[in-house]
Amino acid sequence: MGKLIGIGVGPGDKELITLKALKAIENADVIIAPTAMENGVSIALETVKEYIKPNTEVMIKHFPMGKDDREEKAYEAYKTVEELVETKKTVVFLTIGDPYVYSTYIHMLTHMEKKGFDVETIPGITSFCAAASIIDRPLVIGNEPLLIIPANRVKDIRDEKYVVIMKLYKEEENVISFLEEKGFDYVYVSRAGREGQRVLKNKDEILKLRDYMSLIIASR
Image 1 (spheres, helix red, strand yellow):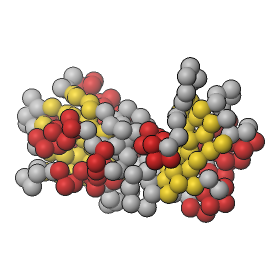
Image 2 (cartoon, one colour):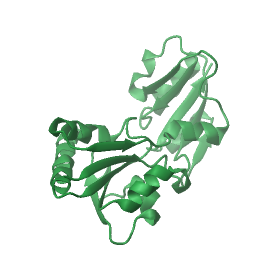
Image 3 (tube, one colour):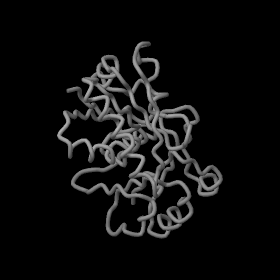
Image 4 (tube, helix red, strand yellow):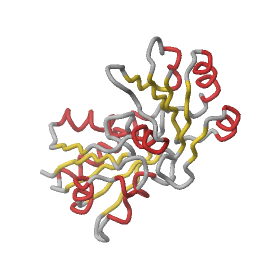
């Protein structure tokens, strides 16, 4: 029996990959990379492609973000992995950021665990940790809690002083209006650690950019 290794490759900066992840990539028989668009580019794969050995098989799987058929696509990916693992292959599944933070890997892992397959997960640097370093701003201080929340639930923020808002795309105006109303100071970061990285504090500039790979770090 083979093995599945889920790897977080970080926010997209090829120098932010852990040594453990690098070793797993170099020793993989097969590497599976997700993409949000049908026939699209995989950011995770682009991040690590120079570390992949020439004889390693690479497969790209479509995982529609937030779409109705996401579970179906996850099951399709699981079946592919199942067939490979049963032939004693070591399969690496790449994911941007960390495998357990809003990741495509989580949906597929559910199927793998039900079957009792050998699975290992290697953590990666999250986009919000990378973004905090880029803007030189603490995520949280002292005994305060840190709230990490998707943009469509921004109104669930109550007394928290430190928040990270993920999945911001198409929710920018609602989020920024809420943050300003509640007295937050915020910074918008898109494509953290990647080509095209932007750091913005102006509402109009943020609404004009509207980048899919973006988040907000805020405090009050």
